[in-house]
Image (cartoon, helix red, strand yellow):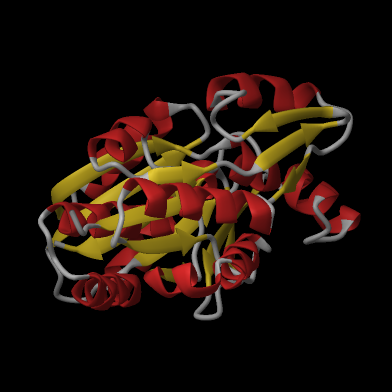
Amino acid sequence: MNRTVIVTDSTSDIPPALAEAYGIEVVPLTLMFGEEAYRDNLDMTPEQFYERLPHSAKLPTTSQPSPVEYMNVYRSILERHQGSTILSFHISSGLSGTYQSAVLAKSMLDEEGDAITVVDSLSASYGFGFMVVEAARMAKEGISPEEILTAVEKLRQSRKLYFLVDTLEYLQKGGRIGKASAILGTLLNIKPILSIDAEGIIYAVEKVRGRKKAIARMIELFKNDLPGVDKINVAVGHTAEPAYGEEFLQELAVHFTMNEKVLTNIGPVVGSHVGNGTLAVFIWPA
């Protein structure tokens, strides 16, 4: 039977139960602690990762799946579901080489590659994970690939997102800011609010002193971004600390009527770049 199969990578941070319910194929990135390699969200859980991260002398490194790995995934799907179409959604090409690996895999499959569409989400974590889930929901209903891609693009354009980083340490270790800025931020209790621009690149929105003020400012930013919008869908990513996510949802409920709510872990690969205590909030109109 012809069908549309949805593929993504592990940086989409989709809760495992949702991925299983909608038959989403998730290809893991790799996390390296020195010589030790772990498949993202498979060999190491977020809870294990965030327990280990603060005690690691060096920042763990990450690597995307190779084109051959993606080619094998695509070929396996096309053999199991003859005549089907694959929509493959990936973390922003501005943040990772994952999208390019998938594009190369498609080209390596010759004519079989015609059945595959690779999408650069221009986002990260559940900022594109929610789009993958919606694509899978639509695919399950038998909606055409073309209609799915159009709907997902509309979602991408309407979605607003902000990340609250608890510490500048990991941004500094990853080379995104200088050491002096990181030390100054720690001394002044500065909490950076980040977002992702139209080209899929992370940028600093504001730096606020203190976590409570930063959360209040994030809500103000969302209100400014969504004038006249009352009912929203919201997803909150956290670093294996669901209480932080619940706290933010409670604050948000004062200002918006919430339809769909999702709490999810920020996985080890994304977490290695932002560190413990990060809160990522994704909102799109209901």
